[in-house]
Structure formats: structure tokens, C-alpha cells
Length: 78
Image 1 (tube, helix red, strand yellow):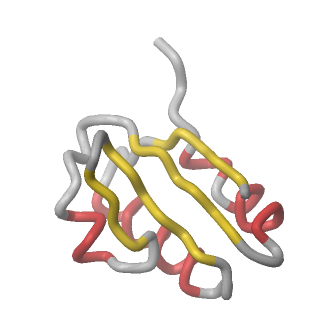
Image 2: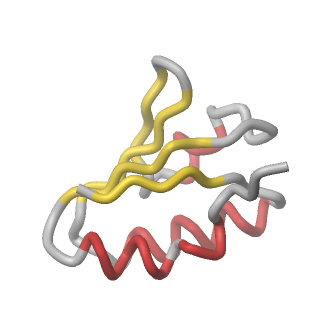
Image 3: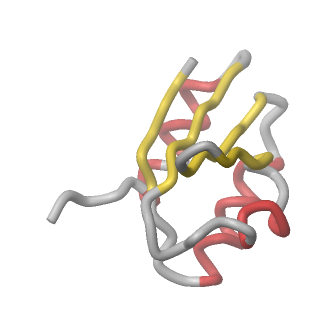
């Protein structure tokens, strides 16, 4: 299982994220606090507070490659 801490800066980021995750057969789950949504669901992602960081959990074959493809969304520490 791969885990990443990400942040969406724009609505376009959300669209690109879903485009990328939808190409993989892996399970992708986004978690914020006690709330989790499907990482391939644009509506689910928009139900999150996009001003805060989100934990992405990727499970399945090819998860490491998907995690590499999502590195541009990685939250930066400030």
C-alpha cells in the first residue's frame, strides 16, 4: 500500500487527479480526518475541504507507479 499527503491547488488539479487515477485498476482512497472518498470520483473529491491536505491511499498492483504519477500533487510543508 502506498500513501501520499497531497493538496489540490485548483479545480483543474482535481480533474487531472481523477483522469490519472481512473486509468489505474488500483484502489484509490482519499481521507481527511474520519471522512473517506473514492479517489476516482470527482464528486467525492469535491465533498472534501480542498483547502486542507488529503491523505491518498493506493492499494493494488501498479500502486507504486500510480504514486509516482501523482507526485506533482504532493503537499509541500510550509
